[in-house]
Image 1 (cartoon, rainbow over the protein chains, first blue to last red):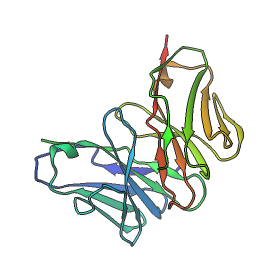
Image 2: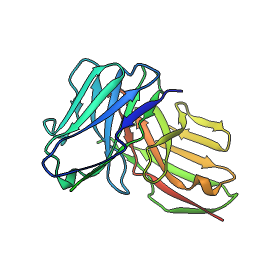
Image 3: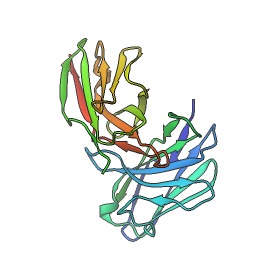
Length: 116
Length: 112
């Protein structure tokens, strides 16, 4: 089945630094990738949708200059949290879609970001 | 605003019983519906998808969809302790670039 690899699984960084999270589709080409964040005991909140070769579409309230998304190839999307602050600490999850059809959403294993 | 609502629980059922998880959604023209299971600290994993009114069965799981009532449910038969997790309902809307909207999830506890 479709596999999405997400790295790192856990990262601790200092306030003010930037962190990059990678999401790779291993055995399929992902035309669309989604980035979510999840706070403890809360649901997944969509941050942005990225399509290969074009700019990401951010959800309302998500700062595009703070959460930089790059989807340069059909197998790789990256999320960079810039100038991280403690309130950015969260569980970030990517999801990839292989194409059209009702199904086909595959999630990465998630990245636990802690900003100290 | 397109919303997906679930009872947060916890829903506690004894081992071997049927667990019934419910979800309502506000966007009447929603197309596709998904149930995901999420263990603590892990990412969601797909259990079932359903697109048409009625029931869809897969092993111990049955998804039920009623578009007129804007209601989708998940039944877990012969519940096992390993089923203890948070179950997320997700809805794909029409014309929104394939985005999924998730409910807040229902925490299920299967007791011995």
